[in-house]
Image (cartoon, rainbow, N blue to C red):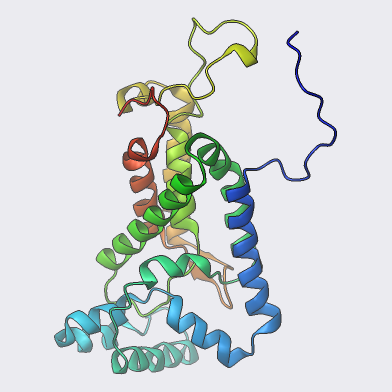
Length: 271
């Protein structure tokens, strides 16, 4: 046995500091909105930070305002909900703004405690291995790129929507995809011996190698299937049941999956 230093105490949270800080930020912001801010301040914060595709479209292409207004009511919604959607759409087109920062800041807000807790659980599970491998700055930048990619794909697919997009799911999806590039691979056969004798950061699997990895393929299949299902049903993620922005999840996942080799600081990384 090697002469390892004694550990005097076990940490309460066995996560990298960057992941712990990210979780504290998301939970703290939601607690601030839920328990401290007056309703009018909270609404202002939502309007300033949430990503609203219709507001962006009305800013860059004013000729499509009529389309935005006509798309606001839902054929399946009740009268009161449709009236509220129509009124909000009128506000959005009357106050158009490109609001480029919202392609990232929407990830800081959540619709309910269920929503934010669901995201931080997955962030802890998949953000931790990425942060340990890449370091805090690359981890944070990858999450930011995932959030932006998710927002861009959401706007591209549903540009007429006036429903505010919020939640860190796209950023978390990017980290999940990045982790899938290396956490499911078995240890190489030549690395027999004790765990402390093994390479800390094995090379990334190439995409063909990943597709031959049964565990990774099952994970990817389950992820795609659950996002498809959640995209067509309503979940209690906010004040009322709402559909999951599957397109934002997909955008973040694709960004994390294909761009992670650029963020990987391991010398043995393979694209």
